[in-house]
Length: 373
Image 1 (cartoon, rainbow, N blue to C red):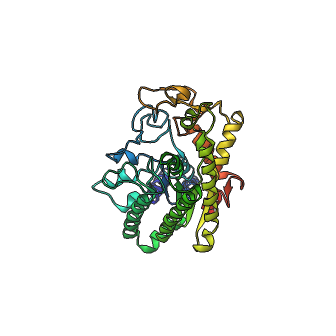
Image 2 (cartoon, rainbow, N blue to C red; image 1 turned 90 degrees about the vertical axis):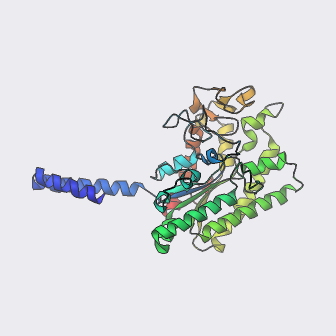
Image 3 (cartoon, rainbow, N blue to C red; image 1 turned 30 degrees about the vertical axis):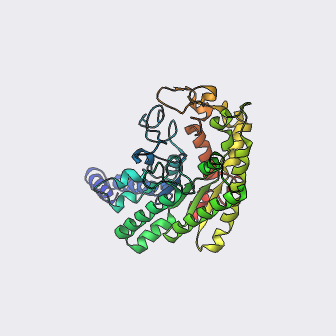
């Protein structure tokens, strides 16, 4: 911006009167200030599952959880599938947009480059992976997703590059002002019922929260200070879960376990600030907000909250959003894009609550206030 400003100043001086010259310089400075001010954080580092995956699984040879085919991405700016389980942008994309950042790229797309440098990590990195869980039960020889622990391992590699490129002090300053977004736990809740776990629900929830905390502790140890953490939503009411019920109602067993996990997560988070100096967080109660969407759809701009937009069969949930599936034309009216994932319209509404929501849904502060701390 400095060289551009100097160039414009020279042109103005040679072409216009002193009065016009002064005005143009003021205008250029004002524009420069506005661009700088629009960027609320230096970077955003994203961890989680398919709700925020930007295409990492495209690079996993053994992954079955991929969305790099139509009709995914039909409303993305490129109109092409990117690996996002959505018709357009997901929550991570939209939060980055609101923070004044460019779209945050998937880590595996960056690490595979031969000419990589620390500069490519300065805007942030997306480590999220579809089918990822908090608990690590992945065979390292045949990884089909990136569990939370491995995502944090990847971040530690990025941290090393940032320190080498910026120096310790500048890297720490950069990371302390950046935001760390974590959206995970959904697949762990499903897995409890699918795997017929021998643990009680309370034991299972406790193990999830323990591992979650350990990963937050690792991130904190390597510079993270501001966290945006999303609780598990009403995942018993996805088209996929409804489709398993004879009456097409929500699976309340799944929902009750999600509530138990969220309560334990909130309890753990409340102790973070006393345990880790300088840490701040914003917790988003996605469960309550999604439940509002489902119970009062028209108030929130939805006309369909049970069936998926893209799929086949009952509730469009007999099959995933595959190239031969059908899809709705009124995507902004649907809560769900496919069997388990929200539409871009739903992501946008959720992000508004994450950023600007009242204390009831985003606490102890919303993200807009978090980044200002």
